[in-house]
Length: 471
Image (spheres, one colour):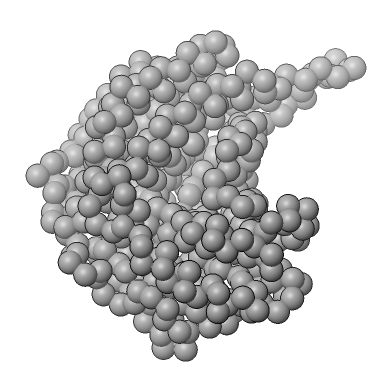
């Protein structure tokens, strides 16, 4: 059993004022593996106080000073890479191949922010005035459990780059991972008070941060419903908000798609991070004329996915993060069956031979756009297949959602794919790929998938405010 009984305030691990203790479980077995002590409003006040004091000097640091910190943060994470990977496997249930990639990517975010900072226009001279992009102040970061390192680093890196200080409320389901990451931050010799981390629930610690008068920006990744609550609360003090919210991402296979490539890619996109990803392409929109070719390929490639042994290089699907999330996925699968969708593979219950919080990778066909599984974010390995007759109908189906975070298009004709991509309402559209390799590109959503952007210069811009000095 492991116990996380400290939070991180003003450069030191301290005992929280809060008294609530939450159990930690290994999702692959269901066994209790530890406890985390949760902070409260008093801890939030102390963390904000430390961040406020640190901002007075940190906001005046040079680009070189902040760049050196970003490099040290990268190096500290790489030095603990094995520990970070092992903890993500144990606590989150992420397969080793996915975990290794995410840990490296998370560390790289600091170097990417350094590069963006060095070319960012912190000062612009006009004929009769100077525009100065000044750091906004204290950033409150509220992060989810589905990629703990990535979400924390993607919010922290631009804060360091712009001279802001930060209070982080990580998911209470990621306490072991956050502990190792915090130890990395502590080892990086960051000035005291610049980074503060308070474990706690959203209703207590998250709400206290959102209401706090000294917090300038709330950056949140999570569900759309919680994002709406944060935005409402932030209006009381006119805080800036950066919200990366839910998704129900469409994956459009055009008539000419090479199915031998497009179907395995579609499965990889839908079940990325075991389906626990806001960008997962969980609506597969396919030509009606080719559905009989598509069905056996979907079944074959889904059933070929390796599930279970998280330390195997071949495993693609891990467990759901918690019993609650497992039950949520089961409820959606039951809903799909009851509403008349046809179960092609998967279904209710655990995969054979596995317990813990594992769910079966599930594919539904004959789905219509009114079904719950076609409209709501499931956050598990469930794919809904919807057919179309014309390209115009495919675009209409793709846009028939309250979300607009990510989208995908497969076609042998790149020009045609680009034409379709321009008509899909989404913050990002990937053509014939599951991965965006351009780290300078902004990430964020249209419609109810969020407000604001992360990555590159766009991410830095969310943490600064332009001031005009005219002579």
